[in-house]
View 1 (spheres, rainbow, N blue to C red):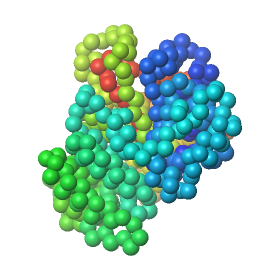
View 2: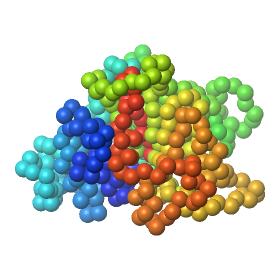
View 3: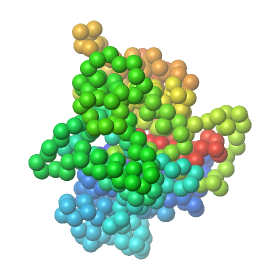
Length: 409
């Protein structure tokens, strides 16, 4: 849903491009993807601009070369932004080095049933009857809340239980009394969706992080309830400890975010399992990409807090510092008590020995910025290249794992 930085498309193209891989394990994974799997992008909102931005074309072309690659475009947003699919096709056919197949049939799909196809791509019987969305940004300043509502409506129409989780500034979307003059009223739409879910005998779960709610004034008195109804939010829009939200991540259900990925494994994929007991007790893993600087916003602290909560729930969690997330790592941070912020590097050092939490940094992102990993973090964060990053994204430790979640912070 969001802007795609040129650097992101670059490392994605390297991770999935067979020409970039040399090690046998990664080739095996890519071979499996080539023969059986599909690599699908679903683009809406600002992400669509990457198709006309010249800085992205080289990397889109690398992705186009991959077998079974598809890119689904939201037709309504294509129209809104004044983009024309025919011109996009001509642009890429002119520069496309990947063969004779034309883009309309093979790559770019101007999709009038965009959200239906998103749901179809992530929904099968093994994932249960729930489909969730985790929102980070508030209404009106960001359109991701509008896209989230469009998705939730299609979830209901698909006879699945919609689940909305809000974190960081995302908690504002449930505020009472919204009266936008120029935008769709998010509060009213949430009420309509709750009514529509009830009419279809579906349960619409709406959970919001209580730490974020307390910081922003929704919870003004000390509260010991597991679920708290704020007088400032619509009914059944409940605040709770972040751990209650993480409980849903323990379940075998798909949960999407504005910028995310879902790795879904085919039943036929087979790997040697050394520990049957661990396989039976394993939970679906999560990869969290930290892409922002440490203190200019709540993104990095929020991402690390979320990662620690997942690890405390014994969810295998990998945190990867990448893109501008590498600003967290090249110098020693010195924070005074009066600053009232957590030292990001101290958090990494204090949690790097957690059993279910691992830290990585993409070496290419460091090199682009002429950064070096600060000495005190050398034993806490592992440097990886694009080949290893691809292995982390694609690898499947246990056959019982049906999918892996990827979230960008």
